[in-house]
Amino acid sequence: MENPELAVIGLTCNVVGVFFLANSIRFREPRKALQDALGVGGRSLLRVRDTALNNMQVIIGFLFLTTGFLLQVVAQWDMGVTTLAFCAGIIVFAGAVYAIGAYSSRRAFRKLLREFFQSEDWSFTDDMELTKEIGEALGVPHAKDMTVEVYVHRVRQALGVQAQPRPQNAAERARRIALPGR
Image 1: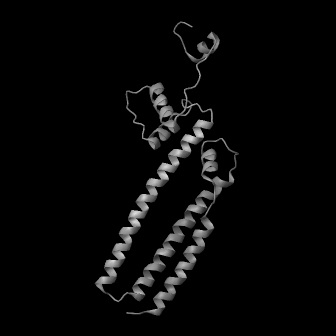
Image 2: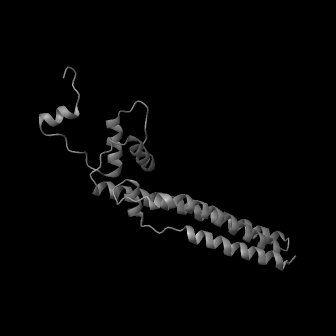
Image 3: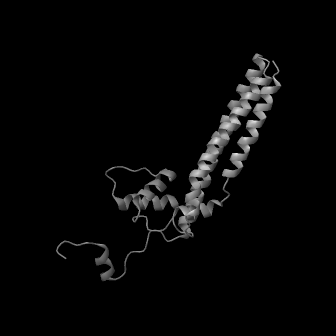
């Protein structure tokens, strides 16, 4: 069942989809993205403004691409079982490639986190929500009865970061610790 009209419409959808995807691509170095996310790099609202537009373009691009490819498949498919088996095999292979890529990207992200926090003097107690996110990314368990200090210590261990130096003089210690009666 060869249908050239469906194939041409499918190719047109692919071209439109690729256009939207190409418009949405933002090339940023992962280290720069991490610095931006943690507020260490330069600040700009331009990236925030463009995020919604980029997300919309990605969704539209993938919808057009998927529609175009499906129209081409329908136009060329001879309704044979062998073709269906090959297509199923390709989908299974793509799933395996995705799983390997997801695993590799998680490992690379953990490595970037370790590199970043080993090179920055960071107070993990100032933003506990972020510290919990970092802990989750590194696989640090969090229990309800766990103290902040213990959890921060475990996150620091997972990152390979030395503990922050303790205050040296009495005035600095008194400022950090609220003692009863003072």
